[in-house]
Length: 544
Image (cartoon, rainbow, N blue to C red):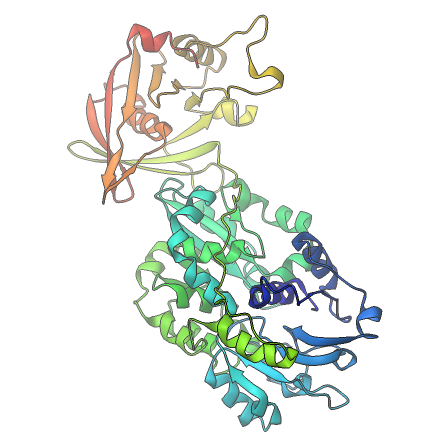
């Protein structure tokens, strides 16, 4: 292996040997890559055994699996099998190999300096074999179309879509995935502000944004610098997923993809028929007539981030899928085909049990939840109010600033038009029980305290454990109980954040008008019934 991404592709293939105690896998780092350090870290995280390069080149192996043709592979002794580490072979790297040749399929790298040839090239589509023939390469004689092991994992994982969305905290929102490859023409290099711009224009209650970053780009920057660069978007709720299996799980979970010229988009389009839009074109790194070039020519192009929803609506079903079909063939049974090819090289009979691809694991990705919102309200008579909440200070100002007390900083709290507080976490700390002088606010007590302490605040609310909100309006004696009902949708129940209903009531509060006893709060295409009544004595005295 030469990089983390090469390691991850090898790990997708190794289940071919699962359960066979005759096989002893180990890894080594082929020198020469700028991204080798991250590869070693990734091996350590996987728990795999690694041997130094000097040891690896001094001993014989029965089989050598590689996911990149680059480096002194001729120094490794054993039947060499080359596996692709991406999809479509659509990208060329300037200053490497033959000018204009696909990275990973360049004849200059496929045959080493001393003429050592691989025993097998395991490819994903017949077009890739034809490309080798068209380049006059004899390597095409040893190329076999087996399919793509990584794609197989995505396909078998589709039934876990709801689990991946739950792990991301998506709920019923539309999940928009953003992906960046590496290099000077990648999305994060050409449009570094796009993640934050998108987070500022996609309403928090109807959309979630998640980002996939190529492992090489992570290695170039390091995790600390990458997250610092992305801080505005992360603070606005962007989910940054991991480079190993989490990126693939996100593709299964996502409702739409915004891409550059990286091969992730081809995997996405091969798994589903949901929208794909292009944020940049890759310039001269994209090989003409390659699958990625075909995709970029077929899907809508994103101009301003403010146009994202309109651009997604412009997508026509099938545009991206046609390109994916040019990158992948032989779907299903790829590990069985590899087993039939690899065990003869090992001079061993293959185990009789069928080998199936492993589903992608469900791993929780922690995204920051905004704690201050610029809220925009629109009245649609007779009884409907549209509410759009955006992370505060990320875009245009709203009709009021809604701030969560105890989570936001003091500056935001002092600027709030609506201040709300959620229940404190219970069971925290040693013993997980009340202290000798334990105390808690009542809903009525805290709302009065908040308005007294923050004179610029027009309304304060306590969100009770039940989900109801107790709202106190400055200058009014009575407290309001605000409840938002679930929305039934196709056999499912969708629940909204109670703070949304409080912001909806603020529409009338700001005008010093009495809110209706019942109205519909619109979040995207869903309408949630909100009821408003005088808070009972029990609700006013409720601890939270």
